[in-house]
Length: 267
Ligand SMILES: [Zn+2]
Ligand SMILES: [Zn+2]
Image (cartoon, rainbow, N blue to C red):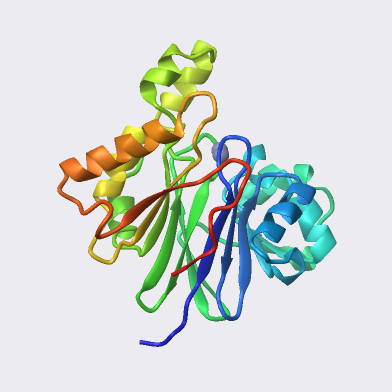
């Protein structure tokens, strides 16, 4: 095989803001910019990368923890923005003025080739207008992102099976959420089919997608109120072990953080 590689860092992940950085030999991307432009500049410095080199931003949905800095960065650095039509409608007012040449439609279910990489989009079950996530593919390497979903259909699990690396939602511990201080209606929203995956449900979905090609699983979008890094990891590892999957030898489970980047790893 070629020595082609992609490099990935979850710059920030959690209910307070989400940004992922992906680069190939030819392209540099962000998926979502859910923090201020200033903050993302700092996070990029921590992985020795510069925003002026980023070609495009892929937006998953219009919630603030995913779009907060999209408009600012796009204006400052001239990045292209990709989102589906409904998401564009829902977020346009919040982004401020964006040059028409930077606006691109990425329809749900479509595949786009940019430079040396293929990008797939797929819908998720979440309380936004038309939420879609993205996966990145070339040859035998792939990176799948799946957060902000209350439910994962069998069809989607089949479609996303066997990726080399995953960013997988592990939003809350159900007991911590139930016992916590959120109002009842908010708890119902999070627990519902259009909310977020719990540690347990994220791990169960993951267990059906892992194959011998899978090397890394990043637990993402942890709630700071209703979760705990150690609980999330332990829950995930326990469930995967119960399913006879090779945790910590065939593949590894990694944390993400709300305010610091993960290592820029090579796939
Ligand atoms: Zn959301
Ligand atoms: Zn979110």
